[in-house]
Length: 148
Image (cartoon, rainbow, N blue to C red; front, side):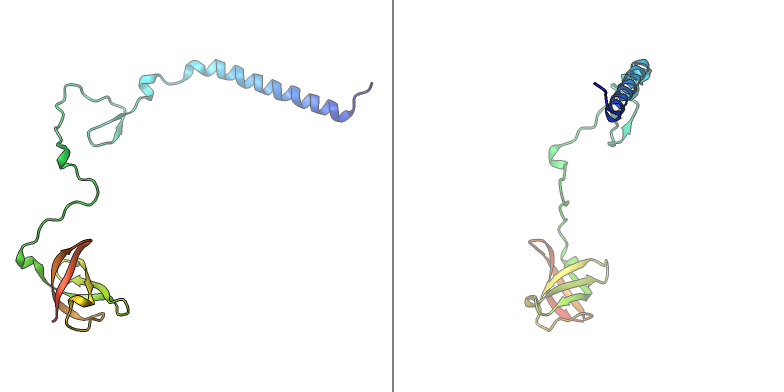
């Protein structure tokens, strides 16, 4: 029975693939001992959280950290004194249909939320105002808003 040309081609291709695979296997065996040692591959974290190749000093005194000093998320805001509560600023954004906006403090550039219900005048963008701030559920809120 005569073999077709296509069949011989496939057999030759398989032999070539097996030969290449065997060469790669032999090359891996030869280079197996040439890698880095475990100590050379080891990485350590220093006290600042940076990766380093130098192991930590066992004799070094470690800093004590109290669990209650660790803040996760947004840090707590300090309480403001009464003179810090009264501020001046400009309304930079105001949505009249929804009745809220933001006032930019003229001293520190901080943006404070404002709602129409906390003012006795019609609020609009660009209006210079004097206001007090109080702590709201999501941060500081402007109240007692006066023109000027």
